[in-house]
Image (cartoon, rainbow, N blue to C red; front, side, top):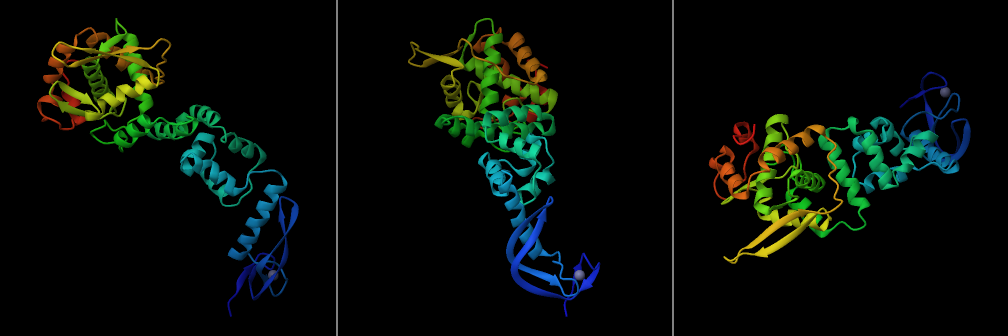
Length: 339
Ligand SMILES: [Zn+2]
């Protein structure tokens, strides 16, 4: 005969299975839940097993409903609407991951926690919380979370942005400088870079090279790129995003950060110049990243596109790679133009 532990008798006892209404107490309040349970034959107490857990979970949900607390399902829905894992969502809220997991599987959250989780309905508020609790996340997780939440705040994410994310956002590797591509970082770097140049505009080939030096210098000095962009060996030097480079600049133009001027040259080629828009904001919270961008802008930004092209052709990153090949960031170790 199978036996179960009875918390009342404090020993294993014989039991009977009954289907009826049970009184379950949650935080001093009794709820009537109907369902199957195993009762101790000696004292009649409900035995603690998965049947009891099921009844308890339903009593919890009744308690939550009565007190206007979010249900487990609602909490899970808020989290998954942002595409966030339990660990990351809990870190953003500043609560323990184990607690969140329990709330999502039935346990009753306290009223302050309920208010906190409820705030996450507002994506802008969740972004504020993300900044507050940034130190609880790795840099990579922080960026990914910001991206996910922003996807939801944008009334309709532009197709260009979605396209860039789909094409360029890989997991960290030697080809993106151990950092996943972020359109926001790219946009911020362009804004900061242009704001540091003597003239707040630059031909596109010059920007290509300056971006290359920013990302590779950052990788060399801190072990990670700034933008997460890949660079491809092209005839004029390393090009960010390879065939997607025009899409990148079109994106920052669409975002209102820059204006793109196009001019037809005598040889029939189109010369594209990028100019910083008035009031564009460069949001780069990391002081080290700001320092790297400023150093590249101040030292190499004075040079013209032709000179920069020549410098980049002299780098191992370029000399040791072939046409159309992705350039490994490991070549950053031997940068010559800036150290
Ligand atoms: Zn008993």
